[in-house]
Length: 240
Ligand code: HEC
Image 1 (cartoon, rainbow, N blue to C red):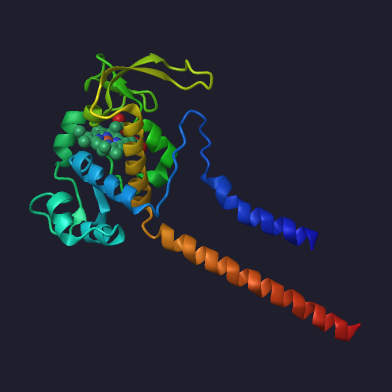
Image 2: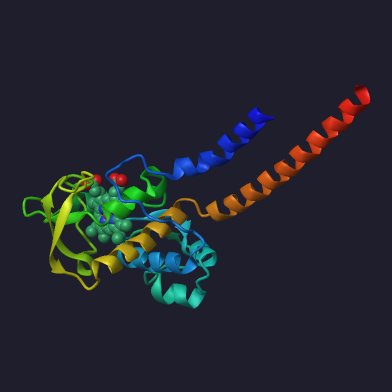
């Protein structure tokens, strides 16, 4: 019985351990896929600031609107390029050839980015752009050295300089905000959390359902375990 309890503990605690990031240099972000308001804000940000270069070509506008409780009118008015239809895939309008000429690389599709990189990585990456006059775009990123992506959210965050690559006690870089954006640093962090939340949803839209099904399955198996144990006791009572 002790071994059984130890096994159950191991099985149920594993998913929590897997969520934690292994990279000590990234900041952790709280992801909550049932926070619909945050997902909606993230979607608006994504469409307005990211979709011009990146696609999310495995997702359709209509599916996103349905999952996030966005009405079709709101979808058409605020979240779609003119000319797109709700049933279309979320594709960028930027031709890959131009992107390659401008940036040297084609901006990758972001549908699965939160599964390739971790949420913590994305959250940190989008807060780690700094001015760098030596780079072609004028920007660099302390998490992604010599990144080809310009800091498209500088209007919100402002311009920051890298003061030290590993100046903090925990080895994290130190920035100095040279020119504030329209948001305060706390507001900017919140906005990036919404965007990261949305990218996690994008990578696995059925995740929330999957969690729910998982809980039901575990409860069912738990009930079955108790019944089997009682049955076993009953059997052995007769045999002894
Ligand atoms: C002006 C074009 C442009 C816009 C707009 C843009 N990006 Fe990018 N992004 C790029 C390019 C180019 C790269 C490739 C960088 C490289 O490989 O050096 C990139 C890379 C990335 C990566 C890293 C991918 C990897 O290699 O793991 C992430 C994450 C990302 N972008 C997220 C975003 C998000 C979120 C937004 C919206 C806030 C956004 N990008 C807006 C051009 C853009």
